[in-house]
Image (cartoon, rainbow, N blue to C red; front, side, top):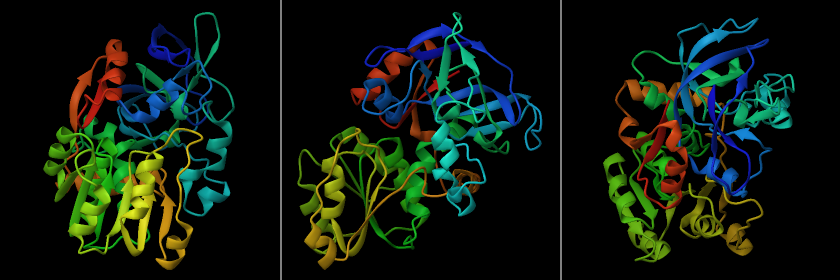
Length: 365
């Protein structure tokens, strides 16, 4: 089986023929159809996020079941699936209290399968990790059944791939927020795949203002196709001042950092109204910190929170997004602007890093 393997930090991914074991108890074998080109993978490749290596990256995607292991009852060969990079155990505190996206067992075991072993090996028998227990930069994936969410025929496999990460992360951060109500004014910092998805989430809530902030005019122009009512180029204008002007000096009800940096996180806190919500969605580099004005936090009664993988159960958010897509309330297919074969995966990440991808690039496997 061919896969793109990360063998060294800050080195290109290497296409290798790996040995793949059959699925074991509670596992399935997936033919990977599409995999998203996401900045979270790039963080690992650059060493600004941690994952043991050698590893097959790839955490956003779609696949088709080709084989099921023992005691798999909810999936069968031929099922088309959204792939989830958090396979929950179902019995830890977080799973039992409605937050399986924070599953303790999934976090403890990391990039091995739930029995604490591997399904991938090199030709010399060296074991290979799978990002998120799925590792989708490969022709096939053996993964936990919990990673797979079956979809109806109305949903294309391209759309399903985006629901696996960027759509769920961006849309879920808004629609699953405890203070989400119709008519909010929302500012979104960072207009990549997650940012565009957040814009669509804001549109689902009939937000009164959806303000897109980025430093790339092509991305800002692209955001208007998905519901952005205002755009701000942070290189050309002072975004906080502009947002205050657009909201009569009050600030927005909610601001999201979908990029992940100290600057963008600090900006979300600076542009929300009294009693407003700042939501951190994008992953910054490990060890990066943002400054917080502690007096403003108290006097303005501000709230800052993190949102991981849509804030709650990924599968429940999948369900919401699938239904909204079938009802033509979302347009995820137009978010895909570039496709790459597996052999050009390094070019895809170079384009992502250089800001050449507007929308979302995906691998077509």
